[in-house]
Length: 83
Image (cartoon, rainbow, N blue to C red; front, top):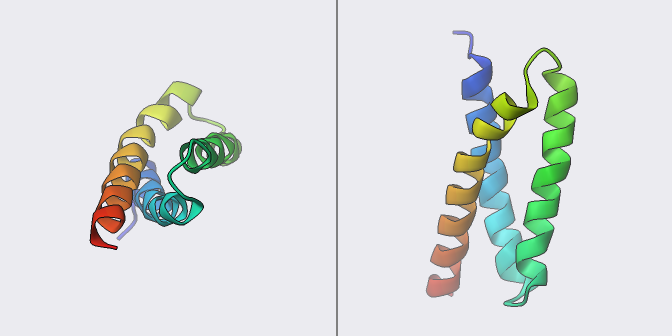
């Protein structure tokens, strides 16, 4: 079964959101723990724009921002409340 580019982006940014949720927790409660994941997200957008050069930047952002932000915040809040 071949995955569509939208599905690949969703899977990758969901996993990336989980990793950034853990990173935000371990960086602490300050502003630094919120800025670093967003900067890494911006870098990943640049990388994916190079990979999917035939797609527009708006397509890449709309297919990645929702899974990333939601999973990042859910993971961060869950770990913060659990530990």
